[in-house]
Amino acid sequence: MEIEEKGVRLRLTVVDTPGFGDAVNCEESWRTTDKYIDEQFNQFFKDESGLNRKNIVDNRVHCCLYFIPPWGHGLRQLDIEFMKRLHKKVNIVPVIAKADTLTPAEVRTTKERILRELEENEVTIYQLPECDSDE
Image (cartoon, helix red, strand yellow):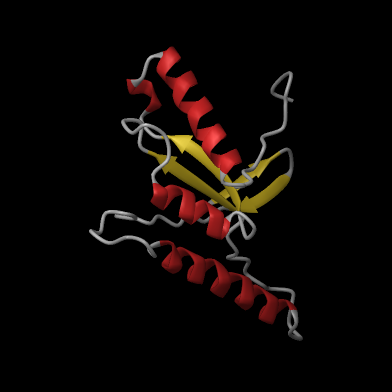
């Protein structure tokens, strides 16, 4: 998908991981995503090091929107393990999935719990910049 904003053109690729964490034993389900991120980085580095760098396609993963189920009581061990393994490779943005099904107080409590658990586990997440307006 191509997007343009204020004269800057970007090519956005969305990679979905349906069924992530649905297996009975999902202790190492982060490995597939980790491998994919490494492969894309290595391919870009290889292309960047080559002679014909003009038409390089950048398929690196720059951001991970990590959807957290709203019905739990914070992060699952799987969530923590995934983010611990990948937060140094890619910007992680935790998103409370289906947050519109929660009350504002529940959203606030869930968000506070998630942020506390991330801090306790030394997981760094992407911090969105503070904005006063749409500019």
